[in-house]
Image (cartoon, rainbow, N blue to C red):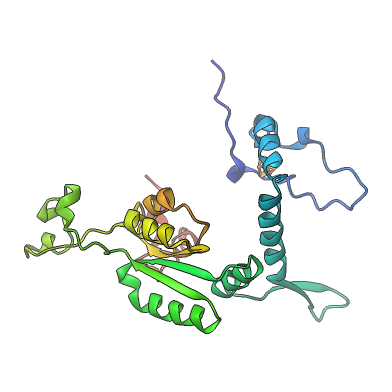
Length: 240
Ligand code: SF4
């Protein structure tokens, strides 16, 4: 039996999907892509996906997304001859507000983790200062004890310490449904845990974006673990 073939873009050294060939010249043929390239393996799926962009509202959404992307860079002199270098311009929170404005969004929702309540307070004020209406919902909304989802006391955060107290479950489904019911134009996810964020995304029926994900160790910057994966402290992450 042959080896199973599936897309593996992360292993690709060719990246012909971004050829930067001059307009008017042919881009490289797909045969130059590696055997595991989805452009070779999933041609019909890519074509079907492309057809989705023909829907006017989707096309406009995609256009404004890419316009926003481009506005986040500028070409500046490097000081070496006539060379220009690409410089980044906006932090994600500013990019989020700019995109919301482009889309004509006014009512924004924040679904935040209680562990980031101060960040939520600041974000709320920042968005309001920029003219948005802000609906915000904390993960503990509902005040339901974790026993409701089958956790034993000794499996809970405080319970593990031997202290028997009411421990509210996170309810990303309630967060999503509240923002759905408010009809926010855009939901912003702020610091939800792994799994809770998955449930939020599953139940959220309004457009949503992520400002930050939870990383308790690295100041909610999970990529720090990737950047440090060759360091002695985090090389364990590369081995099973
Ligand atoms: S789409 Fe093809 S060429 Fe592009 S990164 Fe994936 S495997 Fe490489």
